[in-house]
Image (cartoon, rainbow, N blue to C red; front, side, top):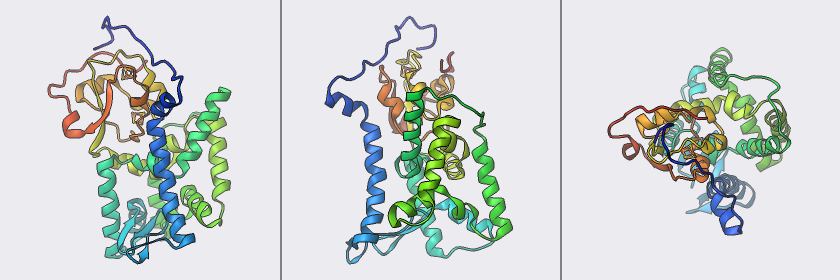
Length: 301
Ligand code: SF4
Ligand code: SF4
């Protein structure tokens, strides 16, 4: 359905029961379980000696970890910085990076941002505060800044011979401080909270984070997509208002392709949860593709 459709625009009624509220927040709850579960696995291994098959369950950190003593899990962006720094990672680290890259190519690159990154808890909380107090942007940040930050991280890695972002990453700092109580992670998180709540909307994840930029590039080749049913959509705009990356919901492009193509999509599912017409859903790329792409009128209101 396009903008000229006679179909009436309607909105979901706010849920009045606990069950209704839980259903409305089902994707947010799933993401919190995932984020908390990952932290718990690291903490359980470090603090309480959790094991699997006699080996540490999940040892290390978000940059480089080992599952069950034998499965390496390495951040591909950290490996890219090492390569830029002129250091050749061990084959185990390369294998771990490829494994993580493959997993997030299936889940959609920025699924890392929505379901694994601990900073997402901070930025979502800041956004909630911002909505409550009616915060306005004090500065305009172009979304392309995060890609410049990514490039800068690689250039600095090449100049210093170190994986530059890993040394200053507030995400890694927060992870370390939550698990080991060491470092400046909570200070960095507080600064990002204030930035997102009172300076610019979605400033860190949406504009500045080079790790998010890396995963947005990978996300373009993601397998799990947000499928879009143009015939059902009334252009009510509720999905756009719920989306942490509202620029990516381009209805004309979605109608032509059958899915949200932008790598910036975090697969957070919030657009699905608020759509009154069930015009959005998770689906595999191969099934979501529009068979006969016909561009229609209309973009997010
Ligand atoms: S896809 Fe978005 S604009 Fe279309 S009906 Fe659903 S919430 Fe409204
Ligand atoms: S398009 Fe939907 S799933 Fe993707 S970031 Fe926006 S709200 Fe989340």
